[in-house]
Amino acid sequence: MLCATTRPLFTTPTTHFATTRRPLLRRISLSTTTTRATMSTTTNSTIEHIVLFNVKPTADTTQLSAMLTGLNSLTTLPMVLHLTAGKIHRNRSSSLSFTHILHSRYRTKQDLADYSAHPDHLSVVRTSVLPICDDLLAVDWVAENLDGPTGVKPGSAIRVQLIKLKEGVEEEKKGEVVEMIGRLKGRISGIEQSSVGVNFSPARAKGFEVCSIGVFGGVSDLDSHDADSDPSNEKHKVRDSVDSLAIVDYVVPSPSSQSASL
Image 1 (cartoon, rainbow, N blue to C red):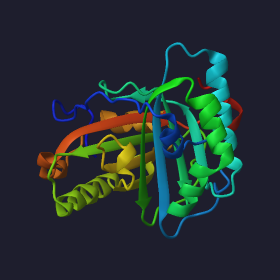
Image 2: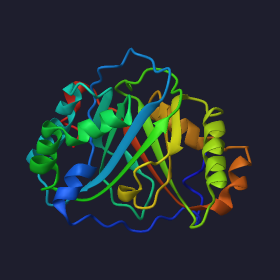
Image 3: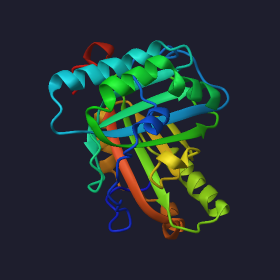
């Protein structure tokens, strides 16, 4: 796994928030903690969707609670396999100021598109998200043959890694980066599930192309992983292709604590 402590290679430029609200409504897709598919296991491809967003420091607890409650309520939409939204546990990218995260999963790209355009989703974004957020980043990718349940159980720790490749990197080299991450994740102790792929929504990704998620049993498992040195030198094979890396950690809250996780 690429390490967040590698400097100065993994530095990420400051992001800028889109100023036009109507296109933004079409581009945001956000998530909640309860899942309809906790016990179902994927056999083919799954669509991963991540949104990182920064809440204004002027937002009060009532506004934050309304935002998270509204987002988490969208788990009832029929096209959603898994939805979780809450406060970021640890932001390992000092140049990024994101405070909250949303992770959701879908069977197909069309299901994701239907979710994004659903009136309930647009209403939550318009009334509870846009008024208190001033920055966002969103990526989508196809996870092939995702092992295990589509739902992520409460208490799990999720590490999201987003890689920005250098300009002009060929598709073949991009594939090597994806394969390298897949191999490294398979060797990590404490990891329960991993997902990696190439972002297919570049317009809202701020240049990040290769995306991955590692699901750990809890924060202690994630911390133990960070304490262990990685003896593999595989990441050095693709170092010249990488421009920067963004890493955030998130702990999936229980349904009863969703709105309390501000």
